[in-house]
Image 1 (cartoon, rainbow over the protein chains, first blue to last red):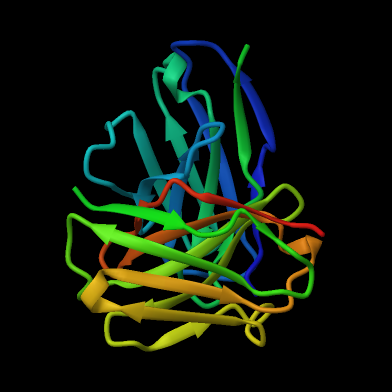
Image 2 (image 1 turned 135 degrees about the horizontal axis):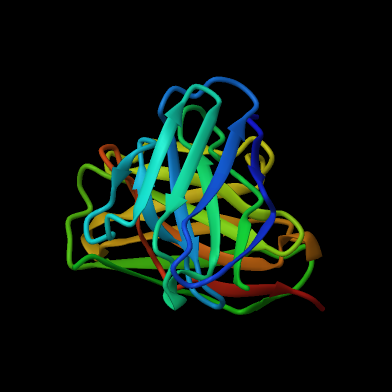
Length: 107
Length: 117
């Protein structure tokens, strides 16, 4: 299985900040990388697919980049509703696997 | 707007079979992969497997011997069966639509299943 490792595991930031979350795959996955946002008690919400493509309705403050083994999710101008847990997921080969999550907290 | 809704027992006894159904509304069953994903505190998010609109399936090897996913296109439903459950199968189970173009784009709200006697 492809292992997905996110860093950091948790992150404190303030409203208005710009933050970057990193995801590393244990082997090359091309651009087959997705990002999700999850709030407590809710299902994950798709933000980005194919490394850099925004899902319909997702604001442009979210951006993704990378290919191969190293990927980033950047969130600009943090708002209170952005504080959540973020997951990466590879859809290059089965079984699909997820990162362990990055909890973004208000500083 | 596409909506998915899980249904099924919230409590299952050890060694028994976990059964969940997902009802899809607001969209077509065709041309997508209908997927189950679970989330537990210990193992995070885990992809269980999918069934395509044509009925082909693929399962996570870690669960393959115990999992069956089926599809009823006439009812716009797909189902999950997981046999011989243990406490390790306690999780929130999500049904999810996977689009070839845009990945896991629609999720159900999730169904908590607890395995306990």
